[in-house]
Image (cartoon, rainbow, N blue to C red; front, side, top):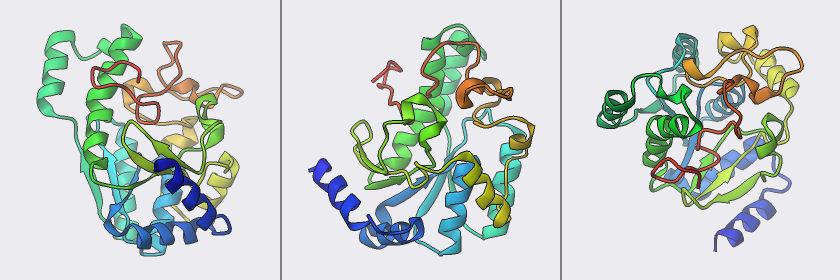
Length: 241
């Protein structure tokens, strides 16, 4: 059934612009369409499109408790500029307390498994809560962001979260993203001008040097697929799904 829905959506929106597709989804699925933003460049473009067209799409974000101040700054500027609501989901306090009491505040530096455990508690579990009961999940994923994302489709079924994922900017380049932001005066995280292409939690993100891979700034101390589990799902115990 999920494959049929994906194919139907691909067919019906084949000639639509991104804005037309967003409007179609908002109308077709009513209150079951959500957009997750981390306030990165791509997400800010989608937020602007939703706000510009006054679409009834729920926008939410995950506050891991370890974000950059610059991320909170652009969060605040976005609220002020577009006069929209952005729902915030936090990790469960007890889970964070247990993690820190058991392994300390920097356990994610010690192993990939520990890092995935932290990501699961702070990001994947809250995301699961945010997506529950919805049918369409809009993301800011782009194919060129990482090798793992090259094979993504504009519409696809996410079996882990049991939801259809819509990736409207999948084929956009970073140059196209930046041009839209500049042309439309979209609020942007100040860290992007300091070499941060992909921005997550403060302890886990650094600026990248010219020529480095886009994801090189995420968990730079480890060799892994550079995913936290949101788009490369983790099982409940924190292992790879």
